[in-house]
Length: 279
Image 1 (cartoon, rainbow, N blue to C red):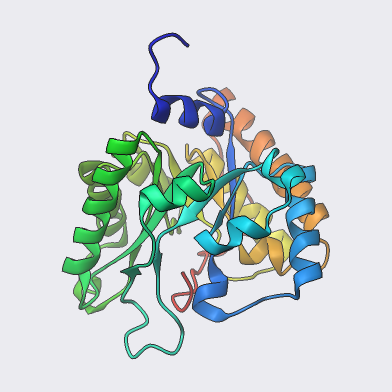
Image 2 (cartoon, helix red, strand yellow):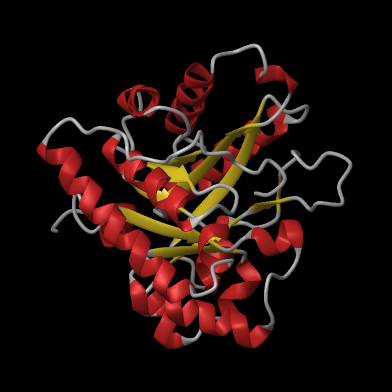
């Protein structure tokens, strides 16, 4: 512990050792799509996440003042500093809406930023990621980079190469953790992860059945990913507390299976689609 800087200390608290599966629940969808529940339901959701096995949530800066102390004590709070809404002419254009220092002052444990590769405004989004990464380094705060391929620029390129490139971009510009829309066979997921030297989280994607999502999470862990960042498959579930417990169980079981031997894909899993309309 002696000699660690602030970023290392915060990362060690989030990652809980070198091998623990990481379960992040993004809740930043409210900026892109609007509220998904009322105030009482939102508070109940946060309590359910904190009590049933989620490690962290992703929210926008204003939500920090809405989080109860009991929840804040149990969950690692990642503040998202980029945004767009479903009403924009270009919904793939993400722009900065928060500063790292201000988010830390409000109580953030880490920062996240979203970039859409191949979009018309890719240059501005990459510049935003670089600037946020520099600020995170100066202030010793971890950075989660959410990298998606959404635009005409990526259509002619193999998915594995695009995802590996996205992960490499996150690494090269200074992110500590990267979230990608992993999909397809385990061998393709493994190839992306093999080329990524930082912890990699798979995006949970659009709402799907319990069976399909559990199979997807199992394959993600068997591919060697560090964990999952699932929002809609949690907060849209009829019983979010039960859903969190189920996901946590699948994460641990398949991480153990992957460590024990080369794994076979979980059954009944489709090519997991990621909803391109939401962040």
